Length: 133
Image (cartoon, rainbow, N blue to C red; front, side, top):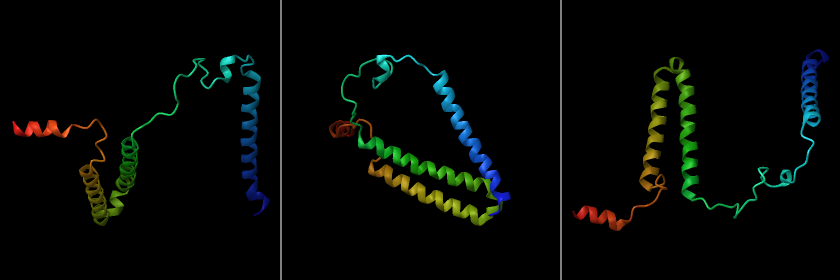
């Protein structure tokens, strides 16, 4: 690498360091100098926390979150396909249809397993009584 090709990188790095130094210096100069006892509390609102900070959250919540991420990535791939739909032509359309079909089969499978049902469960006795009427 010659010095003529690396100088823009050096200027950029110096500009970044200067910007960081400027922001830190302004924060230190213009920032709050007064120290309240509440500043060192876990919550700066001054309200003392009550109870345990560890909440028990259902595993179903995390399962739905993971499934959301998986099926949300589908939208990213389909958006990329939609941008290049003219270039992809009929083979691209067939591939996108197969992709959507596989994801639809996966969604139906997960739905049938009950992975999407993480709300309160309906008792079996109640559903049996409604079928007898």
